[in-house]
Image 1 (cartoon, rainbow, N blue to C red):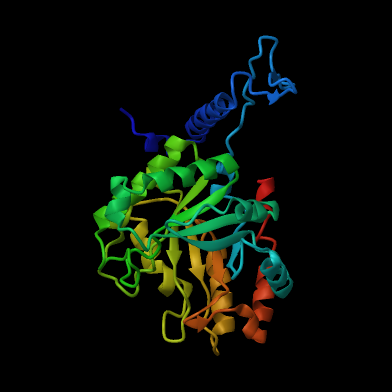
Image 2 (cartoon, helix red, strand yellow):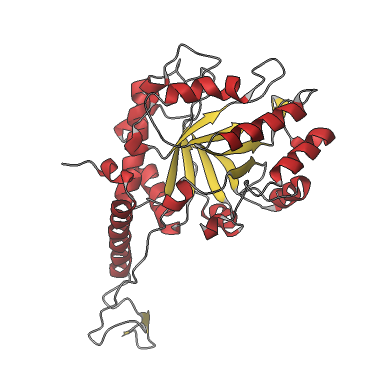
Length: 348
């Protein structure tokens, strides 16, 4: 039997699978509403809905699954940001947009395994013309437990909510798995368990009809652990849409786009041709910050297979916020103003 994941490579099977699942869900909902699906009359009988047929049967409205294919390789680059308070509120987005002179069109946020799906927040981000990007963090339980299906009640509910919203969302599960600083990192679990967990999550989403997801596989750049081979953590092209990377310009680290991202990109290209997406980056405040910003924009512009980046504008271990450095901010505003960066995802 052809696995469900095999249908991820083409837009048509993906939409067809989702359509069947959503229609099935609609029919289940109609059945749950009673024989006629209507509202009650004063005498306790059922009043047919306006869409009911003469025989009292209600036809399910056809729902077209959201096709994320046009968002995978857009004509322009994504200009993203991670902002405290988003997506529960877009007030931070308004402030940040005023600061950099352009609204980001990817908004990354973080959700722990076990948290519910933020339907309202994701809709809020999409209605602003931006792509919601959720970094799903499996602090507990173990990846082996997730892979074995022990948390499937939670997972299936989450996936159904994603499917029901039927708007595009990017999801990265267990980011920086090749590092040793997270509970799901290389010293706490195995690459095999990571791959099994990823594939299981992906398959549950597909079976539920949640094909409105851009799956972003996101290791840390390999510089801190060059001997850890990324291929062993890769779930396979049928399970991934973007090959993500997390890498920051630090005062003592790599100074150029090629030295920061190049080794990781070249290693990834030995096993996948998926588009690159820089899932988190920023430059540490200091004398190099303006140069780092120019280098980042130059590198993303020059590499056709890098579809964009997310600026981590949150204080964490260092203050990465662009607004704390006036000269660097002026440079960022100038580079972000380029028409190559940013677009309304609703118009793709």
